[in-house]
Image (tube, rainbow, N blue to C red):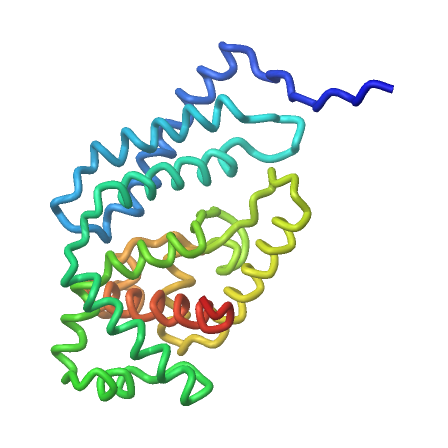
Length: 252
């Protein structure tokens, strides 16, 4: 008996439907780029990121299969974000000195997590780095874009407008066909949920307001009655805590 031919999905969208999806979701590209770019240095060209996002949107429209039961916006968000992050990696915008400083911060938090078996306090992190309060906050501000980029590179963050904090931080690919991949992504989601739960209350609030409620840093500052720059610093610290917690558990 001749071997069965591999199944190749046939296009399920007409050209008009494809073009309509692209036109209707251009705003999604701007939204995702805006969320990523707000924490990046001024030298990063937003137009380049939007161009990469549009490429992602077109790819999503080309590959989208409505029969799988996934909303196009959900699928496209992951593809768009992937293209934007790839564009950032290709530009290698972060200077070596910034990467080194962020690595030192991450390593200090990782050491303390291992020693204390819990999330270290801000004062403990400062002591480990031998920095006073002003120096430590300056470090958090300077490395804010590195923290977000690093976590996204590790977990390929996707955003969702619904669900819990951990679902907003990482949404398993609903289109995945490999069962092992689905299990791995579910395990990562569980690790992240656990790491979020172990954050200090203030860090957890900032993560929740930013990723679940989708407030801007300025709006979060108004809620917490602190400056936007202070929210940015707390966000950097929280993201770095999450990243190091996950890396420690995965031993990567």
